[in-house]
Amino acid sequence: MKLVIIGGTGLIGSKLTTKLREHGHQALPASPDTGVNTLTEEGLADVLRGASVVVDVSNSPSFEEKAVMDFFTTSTRNILKYAAAAGVTHYVALSVVGTERIPDSPYLRAKNAQEALIKSGGIPYSIVHATQFFEFVKRIADDATVGTTVRVPPVLFQPIAAEDVAKAVGTVAVGSPVNGIVEVAGPQQFRFDELIRQGLAAYHDPREVVADPHARYFGAELSERSLIPWGEARLGDIRFGEWLGQPALQQR
Image (cartoon, rainbow, N blue to C red):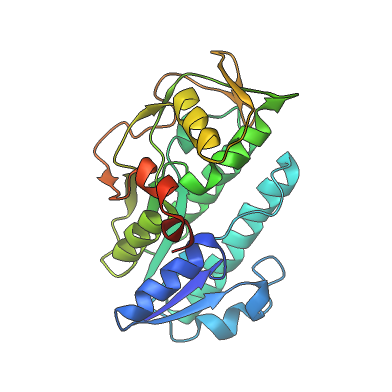
């Protein structure tokens, strides 16, 4: 089976491409690094020719409100156009748990717009909603830092290893379209502040982590269950402590 991985040279895309190839599939990474640009349409027609599945795990280089909306809507429209012309029969996209219920976040508004385009795009689809990745703990802390203090809301948090995300997306990609959403999350729930505190301690980062109910997460104020699946979710295998303790897992 030929699968085209949009964003195939990134964190999830590179892992996904490797996993699909290990299972005998023809997986082609598509990104500016490989001569494919979803914003300008460069290379899209060629890479999608003969593909059965397109998997979009790309991400916007900017989280600024207009830039992120333009990225996801323009790239998705272009992928849909060329995928339809190529006869692609399954459109898979990686998105975020909570996308539809955190409208204050410019990033999640853009992801919601992307999902709406896919749902109405005419190609059978599957959207994978994943919780936040272990790999983003330091970035999340950096965004929430003022001085030497990290302020995050003490809401429920259920992050997942990128390795497990790639595995879940791969399983969905080689299956039949669900024409709906599949949710994936890590095997453990934490309080957001506890998780960040544990992660920074493992990196010997001296910043103080403070639980602040009104702290914003990339522009949005959160409720208790904003960031975790509300229904049944597929759970990853790798636990946070295991990931922190084994550098090989972080690179895998």
